[in-house]
Image (cartoon, rainbow, N blue to C red):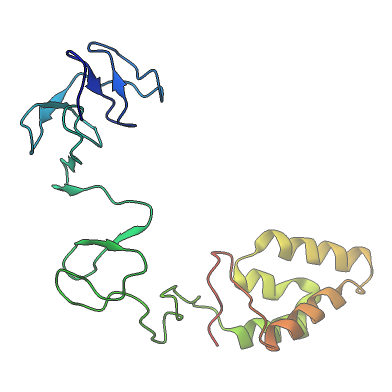
Length: 184
């Protein structure tokens, strides 16, 4: 990357900015004053920079000593290496890192809820008018609404909970208040 005069590259967007600028005219990012040496070109790099303003090299995170994680990346659970989000095996240590299936996770590696689908469904069928199944799943607000609706409609609102209980037991994709799928 050829820079004109003493100009630098913005540490956020990698576009050229005038030397001494306090903000990038392209992305608006502030240009920090504190610096550290670039590993590649040994020029001073402002702290917190993602890229060297002189050569464009990716800067390591000073707290961890490694490159910052990108949006489509994750860390290997065994060696800590940055790998692609969809990777099944770490390229550094060879450990299988995703798509593991056990009783606590689903096929995507997402944790299951500690709450049971059968218990939630039966609570909905038997005590749905009182919103007990919603309280069980952590949905306190909806549970209170179900109680109020049942009281106002003199119990007819209990059909709402009954239907939800049947749907849960039938195997619909139901989640707890934290968004985790119910265990079977």
